[in-house]
Image (cartoon, rainbow, N blue to C red; front, side, top):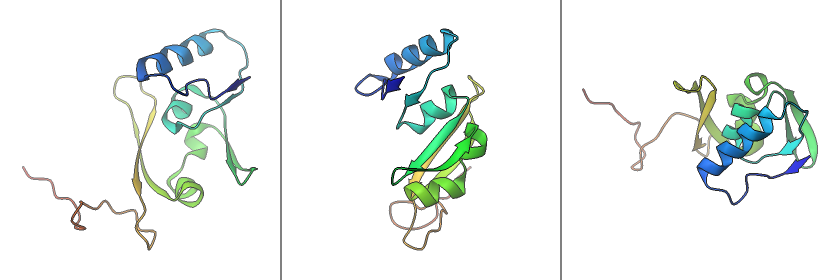
Length: 114
């Protein structure tokens, strides 16, 4: 049982610790607040809101755009990391109307130039 084992660790140490725990080959229960680490290293995730479980299952089934918007009030873009083949999450604030369309700092939608 681990309570925020990656708290106060730099990125490399976080990854090394979770690799070590995974390689132990034993069932581990861990409280993680870093959702990218949870998505990458956990087989099953429980999302809590106000002390109650609101979702549980695999990272792919639980860490959805809708659930993260509802529970954490953020927009999320899910992708697969090209090197690790693990789920990766990118977050942005929701606008006051709940729209998750990306916005630039001046309020307009970002444009890609070629």
